[in-house]
Image 1 (cartoon, rainbow, N blue to C red):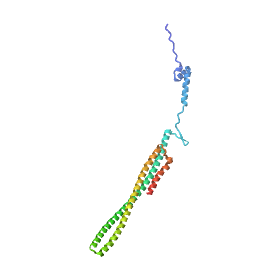
Image 2 (cartoon, rainbow, N blue to C red):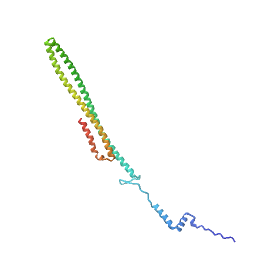
Image 3 (tube, one colour):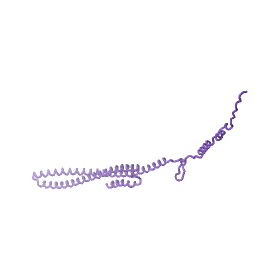
Image 4 (cartoon, rainbow, N blue to C red):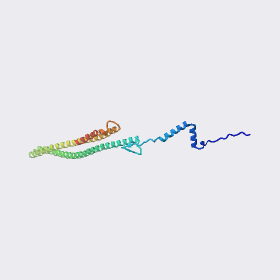
Length: 236
C-alpha cells in the first residue's frame, strides 16, 4: 500500500497583505505594537513652521535670520551712503567757493600786475627824462647860460618830484601784487585742506562703518570739521 502524503493547507490569513499583517500581529504582537506606534508618530508629526511674524502679520514666504541680517546691513549701508554723499556735497560746495575766490583773486592779481607794469613804464620814462634834464643842466653850466640853467633846474626839480611819486606808486603796486599772491596762497592752502579733510572724513566714516568709535550717532560732530574748512575759506 503506498505511503500516504500529508496534505498542506494554506491558511487563509496568508493569502493577502491584510491577512499577513493580522498573522504577524497574532504571532508577534509586541513587534506590531512598536510598528504601529512609530506609524502614529509619523502621522502626528508636524512640519516645522519657518514662517515668521513681522508687525503682527504672518508671511507665507519665510524670512530666515540671514535674510533679516542682510536687510539690516543693506539699510545701514544705504544710510552710510547718504551720510557720505552729504559730506561730499558740503565739501564740493566748499571747493566751489574756494574756486570762485581763487578766480576773483586771480583777476585782481592780473589787474594789479597790469597797473604795476604801467607804473614801472612811467618810472622808466621819468628816469630817462631826469637823466636828459641833468645833461642839459650840465651843458648850460658849461656855457655859463644862467637863464637856461635856471629853467632846466626847475624842470629837473619837477621831474625828480614826479619820479618820486611814481616810485612810491610802484612800491604800492608791488605791495598790492604781493598781497594778492599771499591771498592766492592762502586760498590754495584752504583748497588743499578741504581735499585732505574730504579724505580724512571718508576714512573716519569708513572706520566707523567697520565698528570704530565714529558712527552715525556722532555724525554731527564730524560735520563740524567741514564747518571749520568753510570758515577758513570765508576768512580768506
